[in-house]
Length: 288
Image (cartoon, rainbow, N blue to C red; front, side, top):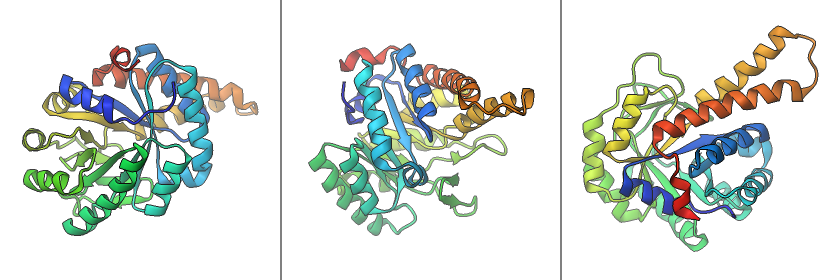
C-alpha cells in the first residue's frame, strides 16, 4: 500500500465508535516499532512528526521512511505533521508526501484562525490531504509550543460548529481539558464538552495530550466522539528508559543495535496497549 489520507479511517472511526492512535516518532526505530504494533494488532495507523522533528530529520527522509513502511505492510498508514503554524513548512511537507497536516493557529483570534485554516484547507483539498485544526488552547508543552495553565482555554461548542462550517476542515482538535506532556495531577477532562461539541460537529474530533490519560477516561472520550488520539510523551519515556537501562547494566556499551532493540520493543509494547484502548484493533481490514 501507499501512504493514505487519514480522512477515510477517521470518519469510519467516528461512525463506528472507536479511535485511531496517532503516534509521534522521532527516529527510524520509533517509526518501525509503531508500525510493527499496528501490523500485529491490524490497526489503522497515523504516524506523526512535530515541527522540531521535521527540522531535525528532514521532511523527505521522514516521508520516505513512512512510505516504505506503507509499501511493506497491508495496513493503512497516514503521515501527519503535528502542530504547525508555518504555512510554507506545511506545503513543503505535503510536497514531500505527508498525507495529513495540522495548521495550529489557535493562539490567534477566531477570525484569524479561520483565515489561516481556510488557506491550508484549500491546499490540502487539492492534494487529497487531511487537514486538522485546533480551537481553544491545549495546555502543556508540545515540541516548540508551550501553553501555561493560566493561558489554556476550552473550546466553545458553537464556535466549533461555526469554525468547521467556515473552514471546511477535515478534523478538529478542540481543547477539552487535556494537556500535552505528562500530567502533574489527574487529567481534568470536560466530558460534557466533548459530547456537546460532537453533537454539533460532524467531522472527526482529535484528543490531544493522550499521554497519561487513564484508560477508562480514554474509552469514555472515545465513546463521546473522539476519533483520533495523539500520543507522544509516553512513547519517548518508554523508548528512553529502555536505553538508559541498557547503559545502567553495561555503561561501556557502544553498539547502537544493542540499545535500540530493547528500546523498540518497549515502544512497540506501549503502542499496542494504546491501540487496544483506542479500540482500533482489527479495523485495518476495512481499508484494504
